[in-house]
Image (cartoon, rainbow, N blue to C red):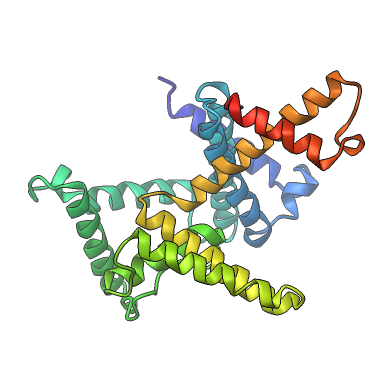
Length: 264
């Protein structure tokens, strides 16, 4: 187990990078706004390492990159005399203790669903204590910056809690068929087609939710599978001395089917 000096060393390096005159020009010109996209990107890199099963070196590297984002934001805040890395650690430590009375207090044992309800109730109490408005509308509190599929699923979950939901997955399948049929008449109108395709994607997310599937993870896995199968097409054509551009669609479809049969 490494000591806290490793964290201190990282904080010192970040401070050095942000020191005017002797630091890194790129790091010095960054702000909260410019670093935020990198923070989101690094979080997805962590998820990617997990999805690829690279739980040793890959996950270590990606978690380090994500930690750097936290240190970077904390350093910029410290320069503005807002807070520092220690405040960040203290805030999450206190929050974990406060939101887990069933572990660190006397709230007793809870099921996973009861824990989620308890977590939300404590969050609402924290908002009230800070003088913030509670979530007055059913869809409040879903960050706009989330990936579209993830945000769609969270919006649907919130709507479902107040009864605005399909009864079962089969009803959602019927809705998907309906939305798909509405696309063909507007295919020549990009604006109208975009709206109808958006409705179809939203319905597909709803189906994933009813099936107990995380839509974002499902599409990420589908992307990986598509890449793997398409590369098998390229590999097969390369053995024949050709590239995809030199093959017909019929040939590539046959190779795709062959890849599916071998579960590539």
